[in-house]
Length: 399
Ligand code: PMP
Image (tube, rainbow, N blue to C red; front, side, top):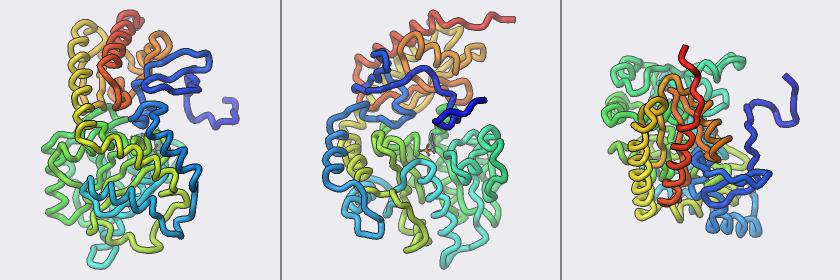
């Protein structure tokens, strides 16, 4: 393998976007792609949304960065809005999803290691096929060999059980357990929503054993599933939650949210970040919330979800050699393919021959993550291109 100036950790494809316009990306040669990947659930306002770009521009002209050693009116304001709209009492801002999960893990451990806690409780129970990020703690929390290979030793303190297996989760609880870390909808794992019984069961187990329920809503949060956060649809509240991706609409930022009780260990001097809560990021977050934390906008996401899902369900029987089923929540949808239709090859085919961007996920699933601002015309165009792609996708000849 030859080295390149950009460290070659991504198997990059031929798409080289230079510009974005709403739900479209435009490549170097002027080619247009319908973007139903949204930077992997990030660009929820599409590309070049005037409210977001103007907010960032205005803030850039006023103040780009100050140290967290000074007071932060921008951070206080956005934190207050998140507190008002969620279960949380307090917020720590980060620059990415993995850092938000890191902070969530530290918060859960610190809860037990602070006064009134049981310092033996350090282990987080996490779930097979989870994805929590690429830092050492978050790869250790994600039980995926392909993410671990070459990076040993992993961090101790994680115990893995099957996703959506409440009995398994219960059986894994011991006197060393601090809590659960779970994605309400597994994203990279294949767009798998947890069952309501599972999420409620985890909440009950946490209440019973004084454990922390830590949600990773980095991919499924911020209106993606049709509610501000996915947990709302499960009728439960977490103790701690990581959010990122959509929250900056493309500006790199994330946050760890917690209840007052859960955050009791996170006192002055225990945690920090040079850039976390930076005024520019806060301006982006405010602009995103202005649009998405709104009942009408959430209703729009649900309407578009129903239409897109309905259209996909209608399409499946017409291409039943390739398509198996559709699953997911809101505008976080997964099209499961039949075994013989390989998802990565199909995603590449849609991209290269039909100008359609989607993302492959585990379990042979094609992830459909459009900007949340899509309209009916985008749904129609997506279905048209997907259908054409299914028609001329060359499947391997059966042996
Ligand atoms: N958690 C989940 C559920 C994710 O989907 C991701 C990113 N795919 C992460 C954490 C990590 O986020 P980031 O890449 O911003 O560090």
